[in-house]
Image 1 (cartoon, rainbow, N blue to C red):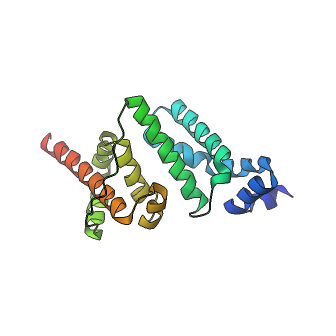
Image 2: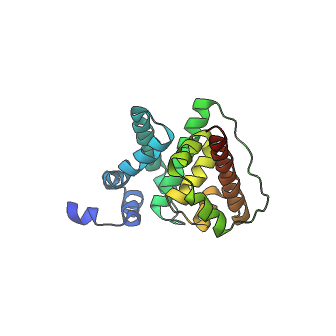
Image 3: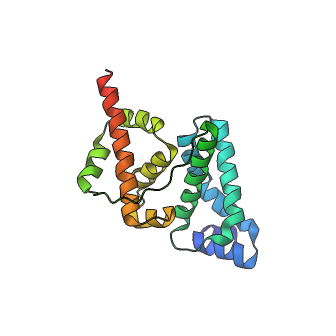
Length: 187
C-alpha cells in the first residue's frame, strides 16, 4: 500500500488494519496525526514542556496498547482525548496528592445562559481560575468548552448520566466563577 494511500485512510480504517491485520507499523500514521494535539493537551495540565512531552509519549503508547479496546462508540479522536484527559488528571492528582471524589448524581439545571456567561468571562481571569480548580473540574470544562465535545459524548466518555454530566459542568463553572470573584475582590 502506498504511503499516500495509507495517510488518506480514516482513523477507524487505520485501526482496523492495525488491530485486525496486525499492521502495527501503521500506528505511526495515527501517531503523526495526533501527537501534537496530545502534547498541547498535556501542556495545558503540565507547564513543564519536557514533562508534557513525556506525558504525551506515555499516553500515545498506552493508546497503542489499548487500541483493540476502541469500540467506535465515539470518534477515535474523542476516545484518545478521553484517555489523554484521564491520564493527565491522574498524573496531576499523583503529583499533587489530590484524593479522588465520588461522582455526585444530583440533578442540576443546565442552561444555555450559564454556558454563555461562562464563555464570556475574561480569558486571562479564566486561565488563572482554571489553574486553581481540581483536575477533574478542569478536565470536564476543557472537554466541553475547548474541545466542544457534546453532552452526549461526555456521557459516554465519563460513563455518567446526562444529569450527572450537566451537574458536574455546572459545579465546575460555579467554582471557576467563585475564584474569579475572589480575583475581583482582591483587586
